Amino acid sequence: MQYQIISDGSCDLPQEMTKEKNIHVVPFYVSFDDTNYVREMADISVRDFYNQMVEKEGVYPKSSMPSIQDYYDAFEQYAKEDIPVICICITEKFSGSLQSATNAKEMIMDEYPDAKITVINSQINTVLQGLYVLEACKLRDEGYDYEESVQKLLDIRSSGRIFFTVGNIEYLKHGGRIGKLSGIAGSVLGVKPLITLKEGEIFPSGIVRSRKKSMDKVIDLLKEYLDETFTNPSEYSLCIGYGYSYEEAQEFQKLALDRLTDYGVKEIPLFQIGATISVHTGPYPLGFGIIKKA
View 1: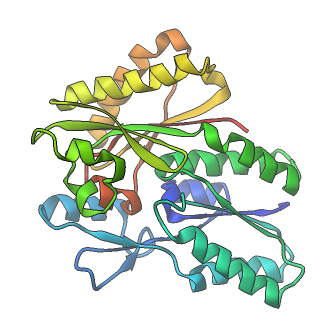
View 2: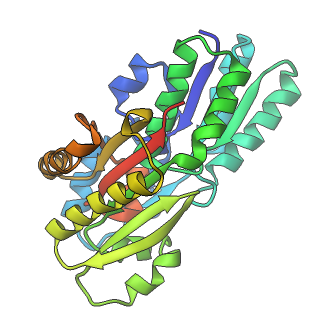
View 3: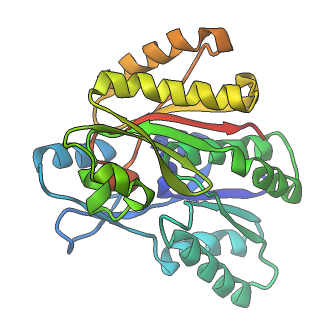
């Protein structure tokens, strides 16, 4: 192993995958009562989190970033063994996780001057961040050296997009992520918003009235991106992110594959969106993550 890949819990990769790929995940904290915070994955599973969210309708959970100490503990074990680290964090516009990691790095460098740690602002989040982390793993496992891997990761970062919809706008409002979606917030009650994430921020991409229509429109957003950028899907990593309902995700996957046949897309993996992001989206986020392969 040339270097260690670390990511915060926003990457939303399954635990079995992070173990297989040797990814060290520093978890976020989540709470349903603003007082008792537990570590996602370590103390509460994603499924349990969604079950509570659905059962406790009207209760809006909150998340808290990993602490400086969390990152310090993660970095120190590799610094002691002289193993370089690439740490990939959620967009700084959504969380202070990047700052925690940066502060921890500075503390490590004071104590271990020969340590090599690069903290990357992914400018993305959730399953798209997961794809980005997997690209880092591919570079490592295929033998690219440390500096080249960092540069390649920085080069593909701006290509990342998330096109998604949510069950309603309420969680975005309560989570403080409404931002540029404020126009949607004032729209007719019950509409399904369409949202794009790029360069670390979310942007409104339309509204529709039904869940089925929102699923169709999310696919339209992806197709428009492919057409406008003359993207060859084989040069990109693509996945579907979903929330509470795996059955709905499978339905969406089939619909997407049918509509993307002309683009040569034959497979789209399903990744469950974790608690870190679903506290803002609610239990029913659904959409795509896409990023250029490194």
